[in-house]
Amino acid sequence: MIYIFNIVPLDPTHRAGLAGHTPANIITRLAFVPAPAYEQEGGASSRLARNKRKYSIEEETSMEQKEILANLASAIIEGDEDKAKKNAQEALKSKIDPLKAVEEGLSKGMASVGEKFEKGEVFLPELLMAADTFNAAMEVLKPEIEAQKKHLTKAGKVLIGTVKSDVHNIGKNIVATVLETNGFEVVDLGIDNPTLKFIEEAEKTKADVIALSSLMTTTMPGQRELIDTLKEMKLREKYFVIVGGGPVSQEWADKIGADGYGRSAVQAVEMVRKLMGKKKR
Ligand code: B12
Image (cartoon, rainbow, N blue to C red; front, side, top):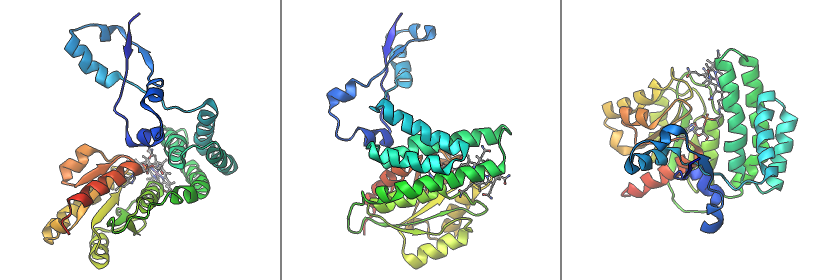
């Protein structure tokens, strides 16, 4: 049996989870993964190239914490608000970072509900229950996320909203909260915003960044429309535009000429911080 020592670059969520740990105890978390037969073929360089993809790392999460995260996910699937709130409290008690509880507990449950919906195993009422359950848990976690607020002056102003014909707002709300927590001024336009509403409000509020959330393939064109309209109005250079939401990808962001894409709220913060660093004023 050949074992490949697998390492993946840490995404920001994982990095946040690793804060305060020494390299030594991080290394103890690297997982040994048995190499499948095809991995053993080819020269060293091709093996190394493959390893980059195959490497995996385990978060230092105790059994108790893993159980709480799993309970948060199952609470969403079951639409059980009491269970969600109870486990959100448990998460805080057991020192799970509230954002980790969102990303690795609640959001995993939500992804599973989405898959079941796609397969026709659950229907709209279940989606609504899942959303209410998510929001119930957020009532417990949000104050703790906000308590981490960093008092930075003039980090920048972000205008955020969900694009037209799209009413999904859970992810957008998390992004808004985490941006605020990290010292950005946030103007939240809510859901179902036509392109011109974004532009009018950006002009009115003197925003630096326009952040567009879209959860459906059918509403993603709204992101492109905003960028194209900014160009037509000769306003494109005035604002950074970042995009995100379930079906959105870096590839899509590049295609429509967005300034950035974020897969999560933490990535949204990194992106806005980077863009504000480029701003001259
Ligand atoms: C909950 C839910 C609903 C709820 C929404 C409640 C609410 N208040 O938001 C309700 C029941 C209302 C709903 C309705 C519908 N839904 Co719905 N819904 C979902 C579900 C299950 C979860 C979405 C969610 O909240 N995820 C959790 C959050 C935390 O994740 P997130 O939104 O992705 O956000 C994270 C990142 O994406 C990122 N992010 C988000 N926004 C932004 C923005 C920026 C700038 C950045 C940088 C990052 C970023 O950061 C967030 C935090 O980490 C998804 C399935 C899925 N997997 O997404 C389907 C899903 C989005 N819905 C779907 C559909 C089809 C519908 C309906 C059309 C159903 C119907 N027949 O009526 C309607 C559409 C209503 C409309 N016009 O918008 C489809 C869309 C398919 C498609 N075309 O692409 C999905 C994918 C389900 C599926 N697999 O089929 N839905």
